[in-house]
Length: 330
Image (tube, rainbow, N blue to C red):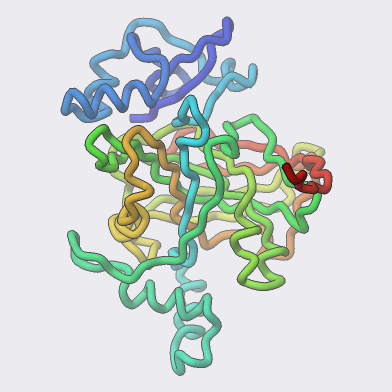
């Protein structure tokens, strides 16, 4: 099942089930968050509640998207109660990339970079038996709900950035129940979007490089994530033609960590189990245009697509003015 959040012609919020190019509107609930809260309290699955509440009204997805009325698949009315986080060095990549990576991480551990040490740790201990904790992954904070952009919206690169590059990833979408327990609603395709040039200057700049917008959606995949997910990442020039394109893979079959292990190491912190909060957690990638020497320019468009998640995610790159900030003493 794919869930979509959108605005009507009258700018009223709605949530519906996407079937092909048609959105079947859900009655009695206007947001994914409302639907998820109700499912938790009723002891039902999200899919069961959504299917049972779906009404007769139908909306055309393409027309809604062209009008710019698609919303992120999950949000919170108070953006401060939505955490956006992620993990890196979790993906094995293609067969060739795997072979090359295994050659890099073999041999003397002391000779490896910190990144390669972290990757090796994941390969060796990122897939423990269910119910047990494996090695913890790299982790980063990206922002709150205010940084999330729906398909069709610009990804704003601060003027001080040295780069604005895509990262095609899958994100887990969660709600913390009234009991303080995390509930996974499902998954969405995303563009985690980072400043790779800043990160390359020094790995300790990773935190700075991640404080950026991200693209998410348009659809929420309810249920289990397939072990193998395939997709395509593109950079579309101002002329409308793709100037870079590459296939990517995700899902546990293509990862050095289980999703359960990544989730445990995020939600083991009490800070992230506050009732009512929403979490968007990116699982990492192995495919970047930056790695191929591509630098994206303002006005060009990122496209991340996978049949597993329905319609493609498209976001144009924009530059946001960032004046110098001088703190005022009181």
